[in-house]
Figure 1: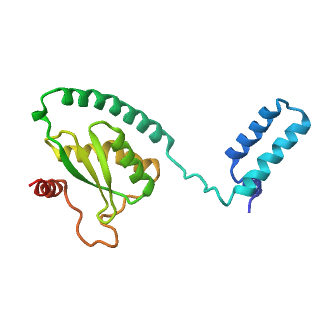
Figure 2: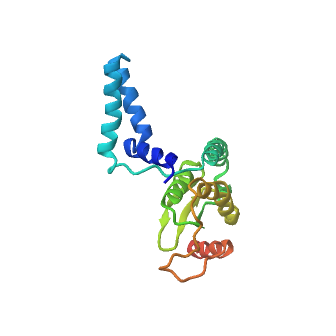
Figure 3: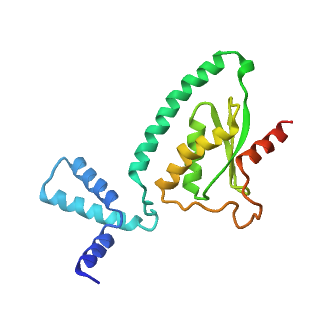
Length: 200
């Protein structure tokens, strides 16, 4: 083992959660309102002891692709603002022009954080509501307030939200379906015809 690796290994053993250690040490000094040597020593001990005691109860944070996370944050924020205006116009306009539809969006990964955040984003964006994840088929059921093109809604959700989330968590796109299902992955037009059959 190289000397540099030895020091890194020792540091990780001493500070299994460096950010938590930093917060605890800084909080101790702020509570004491002092940077005297005794208080600094106590702050270091607090920063070492408490994270060590809790290291087996705190899972290490999963690495994320921060540029993608920041970009996705502003994309979702912009979509929420635009969707609010669009939904207000639709609701205040003639109701017969509304064409609500249930749409099944096929998911490209079984990563739990990706799929959970995707459902959350869809739910918080006005005009679309996530009805839940269908684990057996690896789909997410989405209710669109008004659309004449379900395929366009599916494509928008996948390109604007799902693909950035996959990149954000370094998730591996999985072949649909899962090992418990042997059916081929449906195409968007097949999903549309399936939903139309339900509407009838």
